[in-house]
Length: 267
Image (cartoon, rainbow, N blue to C red; front, side, top):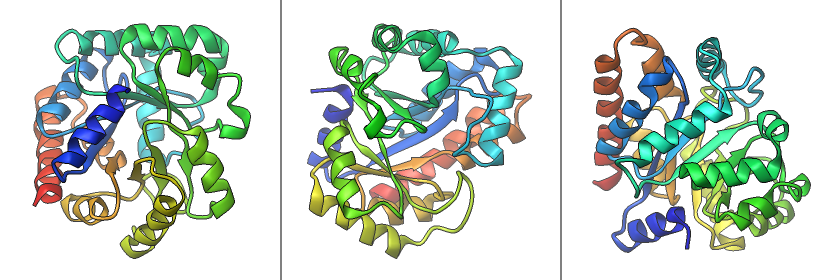
C-alpha cells in the first residue's frame, strides 16, 4: 500500500478528510520551499502537492503562473524539486508528496529516469496535468514499478463513461476539478460538486480529492463533507506572493490559513 493510501485510510478510520495544500516548488526562493512544506504539515496538512515550475502552465490562472515565473527566475528545475523532497524527507518520512506539473520536463528527462529519481527522492505520486490516461502508457508502467501513484484529473464536463476509464487508471486518489476554468477562477458551487463526487463514488471506490475554487475555511469544510480530500492552491500561493520577501511572514500566514481550514474540516 502506498504512503498516500495509508494516510487516506487512516484518516477515514478517524472520520476525517485529507487536507492537501499546493505550493510551487522554488517559489519565491528555492531555499525556502522545504521550510514552507514543514510549516504546512505542522498546520494540519495531510498530503502535499508540489508544483514543478513550467513556462506554460495551461491549467493555471495568473497566481500560479506568476509563481512558476518566480521559480524559473531562480532556474528551478525538476532536479531541484527532487532535491527539495529529499531534504524534506530527512525529517518527515510520513507525509505523502505528490508532484503536480506538465509533461515536457518529464519527457525531456525520460519517463523511466523520472520515475526512478522521483522514487529515490521520496516522492509518492505524480499528477501530470496535460497527460490524460489514454496517452499515459509510456509513463504509468514506470510509476507502478517504482510504487508511485498516478493521479488523474476529472472535470465537471467529464462523462460517466470516461470517469470510469479515468478511475480505472488512477491510484492514490483522483483529482476532481470543481470548476470550469483555470486555478483561482470562478465561484465554487458546493451542490454541483457534491452531485459530481457522488457520481464518481457510484463508479469507483477510489478516493476523490477536490480542488480549484477553495479559498477559505468555510469552503474547505463544505467540500470536505462530500469528498475524501480538499486541495488548496491559489489562495496559499497568493499569500506567498504577497509576502515574498519575508519567510517568517509566509510561514505565519500560510500556517494560519491551513490551520483554520483543518479546524473547520474537523469540526
